[in-house]
Length: 254
Image (cartoon, rainbow, N blue to C red; front, side, top):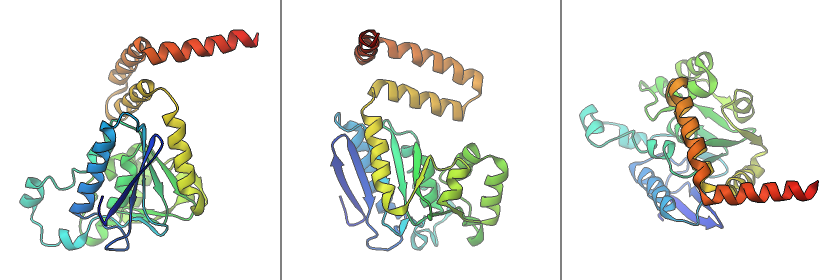
């Protein structure tokens, strides 16, 4: 799509790779953010794409905001330009998203990964929200999503001190869904994406809605939505086909 972002499709999976160009650490410039969201929106319109993997280079997922752009930006300009809102689109994507994290995922880079449905992380990756050290705070959902995943104590530690976690620690604390050797991260993320893509798209869509609802709203409201969507998915042709095939296999095995 641009020098910032390479887009390729492998079967039912779209891979968005931040290239490390023109700046090595993949700082999240407005252009890179627009390219990421544009590629995501295009994938959402493609019937044959069922999952999306977001990756960086072997050394950097992303170091976060492009400080050259941020420097001198006024609060009014930030609000009027919808700054910091781009990655809400990943958090509310219509198709599953997996962050394949190697190297450094710092500041907005960590927030982008947290916006995805799950993180597949290298054991030796570095994840941090160090913004308070330069007089700003995480503003693309990082504080809230980290709090949901890891709890208040760890979120406060990382946000207030800027402490970095390794990928192995991120797995221990429930931030990363899967942790593996750095050279296996993209393969593992692709295996996850293909596994998701092989399942019922309607069921996956409804299940993700329930997960989001549980994270964003009180449990009573989330349970009502869960029951509603669990009922609605029964009306899909794919549900009937897959359940029927399962019952046939079970009957044959007797």
